[in-house]
Amino acid sequence: MKKIYFIRHAKAVDEGEGSDFERDISERGKKDLALMCDRIKKHEVRADTIFASPAKRCAKTAQKLAEAVKFKKKIKFKDELYGAQTHELLAFIREFDDKFQSVFVIAHNDAITEICELLSDAAIGNIPTCGIFCVEFDGSFKEIKEHGAKALFFDYPKKHKK
Image (tube, rainbow, N blue to C red):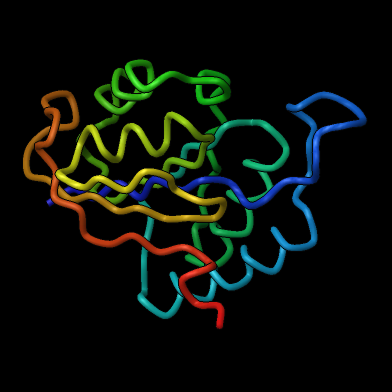
C-alpha cells in the first residue's frame, strides 16, 4: 500500500512587506509546527521522499517535518508546487516513482484541500495551516484515480487545543 501525506505549510506572517513567496512562518505557525512534528513522531510516520514548494513557509515546514521523521535524504523543492492547481498537482503525483511507498507533499491551499477530496472519499472543506491529510491506495502512482484512495487520517493543530 502506498501512502501520500498531504501537508499544508505552517501559518505564515501576514502579507505586507515583500513577496508572497518570501513570507515566513509566524509565531503561531512555529508553535503549531512543533505540535505537528511531535504528533508524527509519536505515530512513527516515515517518508521515503519529501516534495515541497520552495516558498519560504513551505521550505521551513518541510525542513522541520523532515527532522521530526529523521529523513536523511534531500528534500525535493519543486517550483511547480507553488501556485499549483488541482489538476497540476494530480499530474505531479502521477509522475512519482513507484519505488516510494510513503511520500510527503508540502504545499499550499486551495490545491492541497482539493486534491485530498479528489483522491479520497472525504469531504473536508479546508485543510488548515499545518494540517496533515494522509491517503492510502494500492497500485501505481501513475494509475491513481479520482476517489481511488482511502483517507487514513486528518490531523491539524486546532484539533488539539482546548
